[in-house]
Length: 256
Image (cartoon, rainbow, N blue to C red; front, side, top):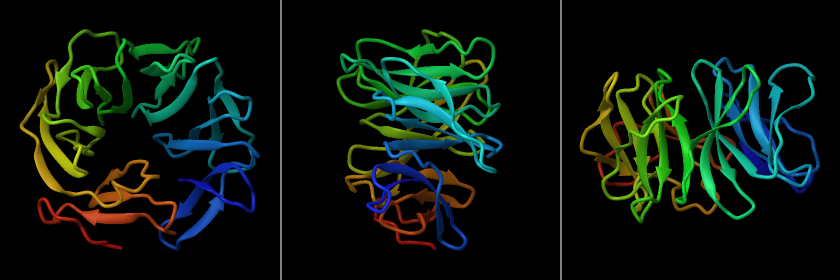
């Protein structure tokens, strides 16, 4: 998680032991560090930092005392959103000096030249890989509102599949890839059945429940877990957790 602590100054990445509620500071630079994303094998964390004046991408091993490694420096702001299941790509939001926001991919092999995955005159963000790495869900305002879309990964493709039907953001995949979750404009967690190997298919979205913390001004997203959902909050020692069995359309209560 990311948290600001007056004792240290700035904004840092912290690790939380959810079983004991123990926190440990992960980044030590006095400038701002944030948007941490775990690698698939949990051995590294990628994050963004403005320690040189621009939000660049860094990675650091989760064990030992190895220093951070610069992954990508450029004039654009860069904010990681996901790490591909095979560990080969990092999806991130790229914000140009003019304010354009697009979804890019950073290969962690070869020459590591960034790939513009969705780049247009519209606002695109929140790229998330499907569990099999074949698809990437993201958010775009190309329809005049924010909606969730899916494209094939990790190659340039003109085929686009819409998922949300009444606006949406913060897409997340079920662990087996058979469902795609997102938040609608009313703070409700929605779910759509998805399938397809060559052509993607999405069913009619359904309401699961009203999401906790969705109206919090520092809300940074959620995670789909094996037994429900986790909603991290900087105000609590452990994440807020909810089960899949919450009443449809109503707020969920804490399960931890």
